[in-house]
Image (cartoon, rainbow, N blue to C red; front, side):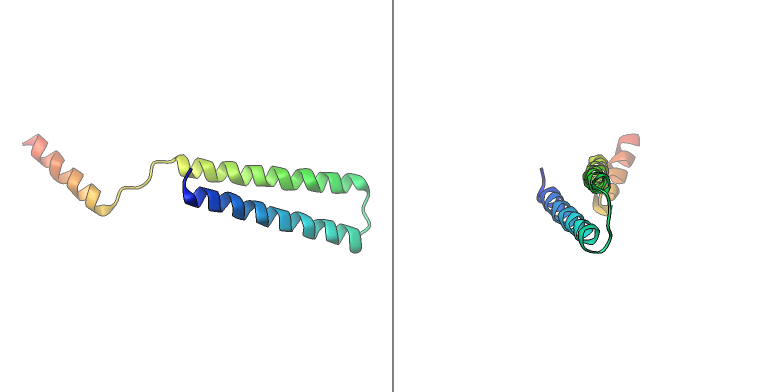
Length: 83
């Protein structure tokens, strides 16, 4: 696991925690809701965090793009092989 993956996971966890607490405060202080709504809110936050985490993992699994120098080197070596 790379450092940027760990930073992403920690950042996502903190963001979702703050979002969950903010939602609980809004539901507790300003909006009167039934307990089922709070349960749905918790499940929604966890599901959103999992979806975002999986999406990020799928993006990271794609092969990284090669730099311009690597592409130039490959073109030169392919020309030599053809000759």
